[in-house]
Amino acid sequence: MYFDMTKQLVFAFLILPALSFAQNVSTETKETSSRIAADSLGHGTVTFTASPSVLALEKNSRGLNNLQGYRIQIFFGPLDQAKAKRQEYMGKGLKHQAYLEQNVPDFSLRIGDFLTESEARQELKNLRPIYPNAFLVKGHIEPPNLNYYINAIKEPEN
Image (cartoon, rainbow, N blue to C red; front, side, top):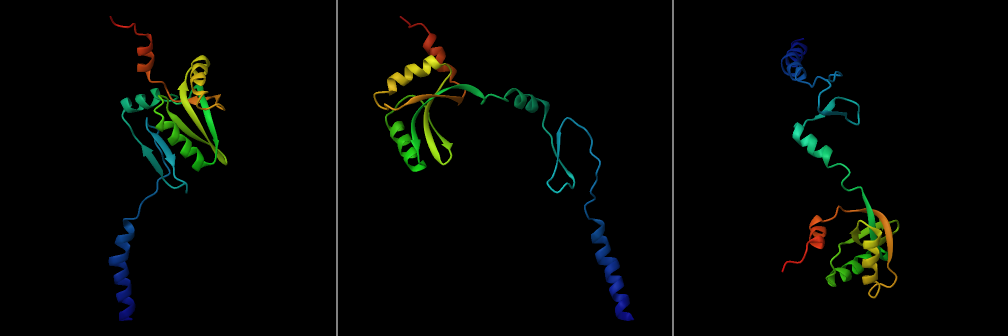
């Protein structure tokens, strides 16, 4: 009997207080300017809060990488060969960026970020002696470096 009483006292003084600190899950959510997302188990919520200036900046930068344009494809094949061709291209010191793009199971090596087809065709003419099988590809490109265009339209200084 003394042993049973001791068990009950230990339970009452040690275990019950620890249980009172357990997390209380609330199903209520308040609508605020922040985003609210439920976790994968459906218990509780996670709230992301940002200042209005950060939210405006994020909203204004959406879609910048969805720019359509042209690139010049100079290689298509396995990853190791595509990487070697990219290193070869970069070693030549040509001015346009080289991109590896996966087209399962192979990879393509594409050059440049051209806004217009005529601009891409002009560069294709320049690359044909080095890469005779090169061709134009329409797709997503990186936003252009505006300094390139500004310098192209500046009048020569005397």
